[in-house]
Length: 207
Image (cartoon, rainbow, N blue to C red; front, side, top):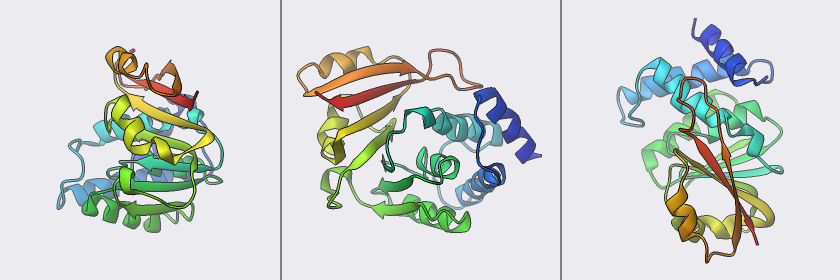
């Protein structure tokens, strides 16, 4: 039943995914629900809410990924990183969060789903120094744009992109970026089940 609802939702989103992905998405949401009963991972508890606000909202950013290495900063319970890693098995994803119980869930889910392209790291972005930078750094509802650049900009490769996932058009935050050495492009994201204009992505590149 859940898999059929996920398949219909993916059709509305206009995305095709690798074979077996729908089952993995269903398992991910079921496991999130199971853990949520014992550990507070996310505020959204019902299946429809998780489908729209976690799964589809994450996959809406799929078109914005650049290159082979992706860092999900402040991943929380693994969103958008886990759904994107399921949909993009040839890319390598690092999911970073300072919350131990959330990173434990990410590690558990990645193992359960057999996601060999996922590494979960407990830590803060401003302290994270992996020895290399990433083609794409992505963050969902983590901080205002100037703060995002401050704490995680050093992790973006010279020719890479920082994808900041936002709600409504972040005009005020963009004004505060004027002095930063980054160019920006804003795209509206269409997520089935969410009202038009409620999701945007800011693509930041080094000037």
